[in-house]
Length: 229
Image (cartoon, rainbow, N blue to C red; front, side, top):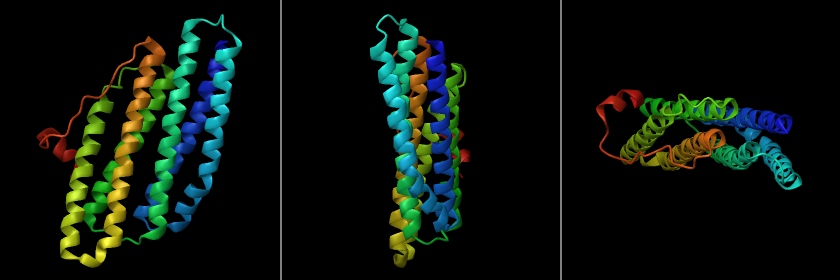
């Protein structure tokens, strides 16, 4: 029984690795105007989708085949079902970014590139951190997800304002600017899914359902401003 859960965790690690690779390639694709990288992300999406279905099938088989299984393994397997859903959605968002990267042509203004890169770095770290906690059961640094998600939200709002200001000065930037607004939103959604994974890590270990995040948009806190500049 423990071997089954361990095998499922290994499957999640594999799926998480492909998802993180998709984030990295899609982000590089749009920041470096590399359409080949964008095409790779789009082509890999079916692999991640099939992996989600395969893991889900194993989880369901485990849950229905042995009603005498202990509560803790069942809880871990139930949490895996939710985590792979979040991972699949993150991968879909990476595909959305790649699709935009295939259609628009930077270079972007330096300020926008820096803030977009900051969002990418934070989001990637959140996915890595939450998956590591989920697989290892070590929850000690999950509290950082709340601050990171808040910082992604701030960077998202700043990037929107910067793009709109640039559009006023350069109306021919419309296509690229609108594309970048969608990219920013996709990264914000990825951060939310990473937080969800962190919450399922807590449930997997403790059995407690709850919300890790309590961030609500407010005037920019001075302690966070330096993180998105």
